[in-house]
Amino acid sequence: MADYRRAKWAAWADHVRGQDDPAKNFEKPEALDDLVVIDISSRSLAGCYCSSLLAELGAETIRIEPPGGDLVRTYSPNGIMVKDTGLAYLQEGRNKHHVTLNMETAEGREMFKCFIGAADVLIETYPAGKMDAWGLGYEELSKINPRLIMCSITGFGQFGPESGRQQYDYDNVSQARSAVQYGTGEVLPEGKTVKDMPWAVPTKAGPHIAWAVSGTFGAMGILSALYHRDNTGEGQAIDICTPEAYGRLHDYQLMWYAHAGVTAERFSSLDTALWLYGFYPTKDGGVFLGGLRLEMWKAFVDIIGKYDEWKAEEWTTLAPFMKKDWQLKYQAMINPETSKYTSEELTAKSVEYAKSGRLAPITPVVAEIVSPWKAMHDENWQDRGMFTPVQDPVYGSIICAQSQWKATETPPRTKWACRPVGYDNGHIYLYYFGYGPVKIKELQDKGII
Image (tube, rainbow, N blue to C red; front, side, top):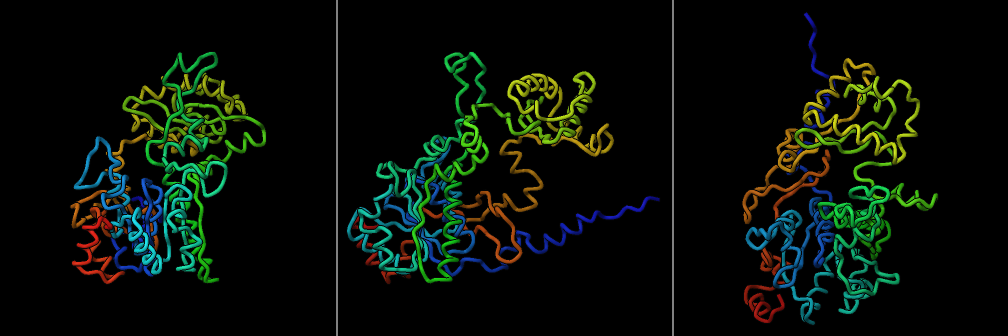
C-alpha cells in the first residue's frame, strides 16, 4: 500500500497561518499606534489612500473635510450612495476619525493650527501654493511643530514650470501624463489610422491606479521620514507628484527610449520584451498565457497540438518572437486555438502537461481572467481573509479589500469601514480642543465646522 504523507508545504502553511492569520490581527499590537496623522486631502483619493495605509497600521488618523463633505465621497458607479458616501470612499475612509472644518475661514485655519501642534504627520493634496497662501505652508507649520512631517501629493509637484497651475490632481490626468497609458490599448496596424479604427486608442487603467501609486509612495516617504525623525528629531516636507509616481512603474519602456530612442507604441496585450506573454480568448472569457523561456513557449505549442505543424523542434531562441511582426503573426494563429477551450480546460491542460507532457515538467503559465465576483469568491483569497466583511456600526456589513500584507507581529487591520461627514466632531474636538456641545453648536452655526 502506498505511503500517503501530508505534503511538507501543508505543514509549513499551518505553521505560518498560526503566526500571521488575519483572524488573529486584533490580538497583536499596532506598529504606528503612537502616531497622529491629519489627512486634509481634497478631491483626491491619493491622499486618502496614503492615510489608509497608515491608519491600517494603527495611526490615529483624523480626516478633515469641509462642512459639506469632500468631493471624493461622491465617487461611485451609477451614483450609488450608502448613506452619504459613495462606494470608493467606503474603501478609503477606513479606520479614520471624520471631522469637518472650513479652511476657507480665518477661524477654521487657526483651529487647524491647533491640530498641527499635536500631529506627527500631515497629508494634503491642494494645488501647490494653496496651503502657503492660507499661511499653512510647511515653513509656517514647522514653526508650530518642528517634528511635523508634511506630505503633499499634487498633479504637478511643488516646483517646476507647471507647479503654479491651480489644477487639482486628477487620476486620469496623471495616467495620461505619466506616458504609461500611451502604450496601452488596441494595436494600430501599419497603414491604419484612428479614423479607420476609432477603438484603437490608449486605454485607461480601470481603478484609480495613479492615485494609488502616489498614495503608496507618499506612505513610504512618510515612514522613511519618521525613521529620520527618530534619529534626528527633525520633521520634513515630502513632495509627491502623481504622474512621476505612476511613471516610476514604466521601467524598461522609458529606458528603451532613453538608451535607444525607441518609443513603445500601443501593442494590445502583447509585450516586445517577453514571449509568450499576453491575454488570449477562450470559450468563456480569456486567459493570461506566460512563457518567458523558449521551452515554455514550445510546451504551450505542444499543448494546443501544433508542435510538429509549427516546427517547434527547430526553434533555438526566443529572440525572433520578441519582434512585433512575429508576435502579431503568432497571436493570430493562437487565438483560434485557445478559443476551442474554456479557461478552466486550458488551465487543467497546462497542469497535466507538467506531469506527462513531451517537455515535462516544463509547462506554460495559464491563468483565467476572472470577474470581480469570481475573485471575491475565490477560496484562496477567502481563506487568506482578503474579502472578510467588516461589521461596521454605521454602514453595516461592508466588504472591502483588506490585509494587503500579512505580518507575524504588527499586521495591518481594518477596524471600521468609514464614517459619515463630521461623525467624530464631538469626540475629536472635545479631546483636542476641550470643546463641549455648546461650543460645537456655535461653530456649526457659524459655518466653521
